[in-house]
Image 1 (cartoon, chains in turn green, blue):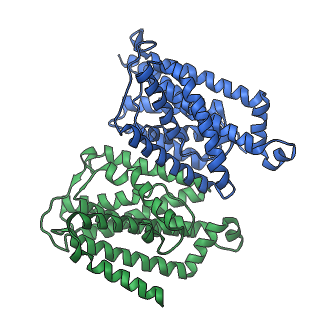
Image 2: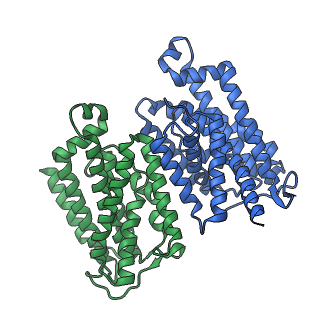
Image 3: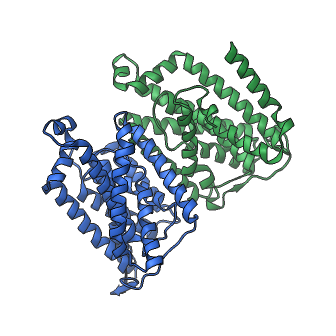
Length: 263
Length: 289
C-alpha cells in the first residue's frame, strides 16, 4: 500500500513537471523518459526472457522510417505510420528471432547476430532511395497538432512519452504477473529445464522478441517526430542499441521498474 | 583495364585481409580458445595505437619499434583485467563477461576521449612508408608489412599453442577445466597469461596499423565487429582459419567496393557472418563437432 502511494506521488510529480520546468530541462526529461520507455521494451526480451539483443536499433529505425516516409511522401498521419511501422517491426523481429533461435544461437552469439542485423539495416538505409540514403529525411513542421504528432513546444511530447511509459510499465507489470512472465523467466534461468518441463522455448522466445520489437518501434516513431529529422546513424546506429540495454542492466534485469529507476 | 581493376581490388583486398587477421588473431585466442567474449578487444587495439602514436610524436619512435612497448603494457593490462575483473564474473555465465567487457570498452573509450580529445590523429612516418607500383598495381608498403607480420604472428601463436608447455596448458584449460586443475595446472595463472597474450597481440596489431590508419578513441569499434566476424568465419580458436577468414572478409569488401554501388559491400560482410553463425557455427574452416 505504501509503495502504491509512493507511486501515485511520483506520477503526480511527473504530471505537473512541465509547469515547473521548461526549455532545456524538459528536453532532457523527454529523452530520459524516451530511453526509459525503450529500455522497458528491451527488458521484456533481455530481462525476462534472458536473450540479450544488441540490435534493438533495428526496430527503432523501422518505426522511425516507416512513419516518416508515409508522412512526408503521402501525408499519412504518423499515428497510422506508427501502427504500420510496429507491424513491420514485429514481422522483422519474428524473422530475426525465428532464424536465431531456430538454429540455437545462445548468449553472446545471439547478441553478436542481432548487432550484425542492425548494421545490415544501417547499411541498407544508407544505400537505397526510399530512405533517401545518407541525407536522411527531414520531417517538415506543417501544423502542430495531436493528429500530426507535432507540438509547438516540449510539453506535448512530454505527456505523450509519459503516457507511453505508464502504458509500457503496466504491460510489463501484467506480463510479470502472468503465466507468460513465468515462462520467460524459466527460459532465462535454465532453458533446458524449461524445455524439459514442456515449455515451447522457441515459441516463447520468438513471442518475447515480437512484443519487444512492437513496442520499440512505437518509440521509433515518437523519436522521429520529436527530432523531426532522421538518418541511418540516428536510427540504426549501434550506439542506440547500446543506450537501450545499459539502463535495464543497471536497474536490475527483469525488474518491472528497473529501467525506470536507472534513468 | 577491366582486368587491372580486378587485380587491384584483389591485391588490396588480400593486404587489408592481413590487417583484419592481425586484429582478429588475439581475439581468436581469447574468444575461440578460452571462450571469453571480449568486447574490450577494440579498446585494447585503440590503446595500442595511442601508445605508438604518442611515442612517435614525443620521441620520434617508429611504430614498428614502439610496438614492443605497447605489447608489454597491454600484456600486463590484459593480465590485470583477467585477474581483477573477468575472474570474478566468469563463474556466472557468458553474458556477464560480455557485459563486463562491454562496460570496460565504454570506460576505456571515454577515458581516451577525456585524456586525448575525440580528434582523429594520424602520423607520417618516413621509413617503410608510401606505395610501390608493380605492373601498374598499387601496393601500400605499410599494409604489406602488416600482412607479413600477421603471417608471422599467426605462425608464432600456432607454434606456441602446439609446442610450448604454457601453450599446452592453455589448451588443456580450454578443453577440460577440471581435468587441467587435477593434473596440477594453475588454471588462474594460465587464464591470466592467455588473456594477457590476447591483449598483447591486439596491441601489436594497433602499433602496426598506426602508420596508415587514423588513431581516435572510437577506432576500436571499427575493427571490433569485423574481428568477431573473422573469428566466427574462421572457426573458433582456429588461427589459420582466422587468417584466411580475414582475407575472405577483406576480399569480399574490396571486390564489393569495386563492383557494387555505394557502401553495399558491408551488407555482404554482415550477411556472410549471419549465415555462418546460423548454418555453420563451427566456422568455414572448422570441423563439424
